[in-house]
Length: 323
Ligand SMILES: C[S@@+](CC[C@H](N)C(=O)[O-])C[C@H]1O[C@@H](n2cnc3c(N)ncnc32)[C@H](O)[C@@H]1O
Image (cartoon, rainbow, N blue to C red; front, top):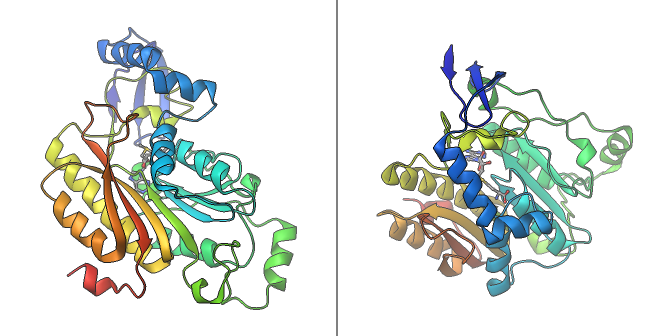
């Protein structure tokens, strides 16, 4: 059993990864106090509360969209690493009506209204296959059908690595699926329903994934109800964070090659380091324009940056990008 003292008002004994947590009382740590103090004075954190976004990260995507005009109504958006869900919220707002937003995250997280989600590791083939199945499904899930998704009880790291969670289909949707007589058509939205694009059902791939590490200190309130609060977004080791982020960007890029329509757009977060240039070169093979952005809402002290790929090229071949 691994045990750790949770600074903040609580401490926890964690066994089986994250699956069991016993709350005990303890003193606030300086790191959690610093985090709370920073959130209180952070303009974007306050603004996120006022505008009811799940997190301040919403403003990074809003800034990027302001500059590059990524979204339009009726689009299909895949949001990789969606939890707690502010990018998905922005995606839904900017693509309604008739849109489809699907998120994937390792963490159990109730998706925002209008979003469907898969809980699982995006690097797992099984999770990607399930995501594609949802995208290609003729049934129009994702329109405010949050009730289609069930929250699984928390799982151990091993259990959660490779698992997707969804509630069984409702009776109505079973009927709709059965009556959909051409399973090769994927009319997901007005933006993607034309013949030439139906094998590429996605209009935008977003990836805010980062290789997080379980936190052993710095816990604060709601770390049990919101597992997101138990994770650090980075390990603090620049080289490791950089390498992990490039791997996740590459996984998102491979998925985009498979599913993103020609002309579609791509956003991925990465931590700066010596592999940037190579990643940028790969992106340039897939997109007509590639930009680097550090939005104002991204903290100065963070090494995070974003690549924005505009306009996926026609006939992109996997082997031309990765070799
Ligand atoms: C910075 S948070 C995303 C914040 C989100 N964009 C928002 O606006 O609320 C990064 C997320 O990526 C998820 N993540 C990291 N690696 C992942 C993977 N391999 N598969 C799925 N999700 C992953 C983490 O669980 C975490 O929730």
